[in-house]
Length: 237
Ligand SMILES: C[S@@+](CC[C@H](N)C(=O)[O-])C[C@H]1O[C@@H](n2cnc3c(N)ncnc32)[C@H](O)[C@@H]1O
Image (cartoon, rainbow, N blue to C red; front, top):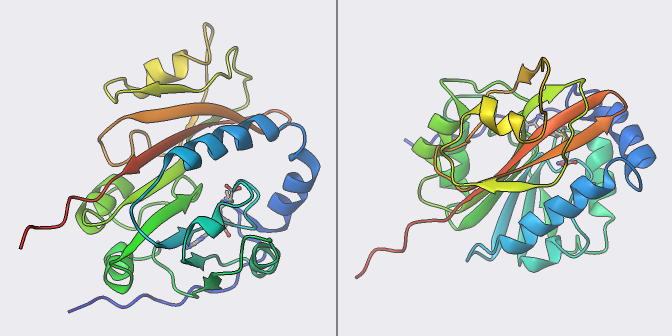
């Protein structure tokens, strides 16, 4: 039986988004967030899934999405619970083929299965959301590998957060064999590092993975990971 997607309820004060996130975006987009957004733009530019439809999960107002990105697709379906973020995203010049779907693919163990069966022809982009929410069962990696193996998907997500500033903020790409400690040590060297583990490290389990530190706010740093998975080639007739 095809799992149906539960409704996505409006949330203006979601801890991972909401009004605080909008105020931070307005305050920091030309300063603290600029380098991170440039890195995300590079990741998205290099991601060219062979699909005309995009499902965008957790885009917020698209603060991190470079101008023109939405216009790369014939249709963009966005799943975003924040009504202010939806209003803002819909006003982007590249949002002419954007529509919203009030369906929650992240809250239940078969949510990603429901997403895959509703949009089998789409590429899926998780837009800094998987590191914000606990996986409803097992891990996000297990759920992605189980339910989205048949289509291209990509994600950028927090893997760790800390109050300590890194010594290095240059993005790196790794094959996928390093553990979290040695990956963190590329950016934070020496001393004691206390981190909050977002349980998304090496998402999906297969590299390469790219990393960059992001200063979310004064005294708040995230290590963000990017990974993209292509779909298996279509079966020969
Ligand atoms: C940290 S923000 C990321 C915002 C934006 N993508 C960016 O990179 O700047 C996480 C976003 O996920 C959204 N979100 C939370 N739960 C969600 C769900 N179940 N489905 C889709 N989006 C969700 C929040 O409303 C918020 O906009």
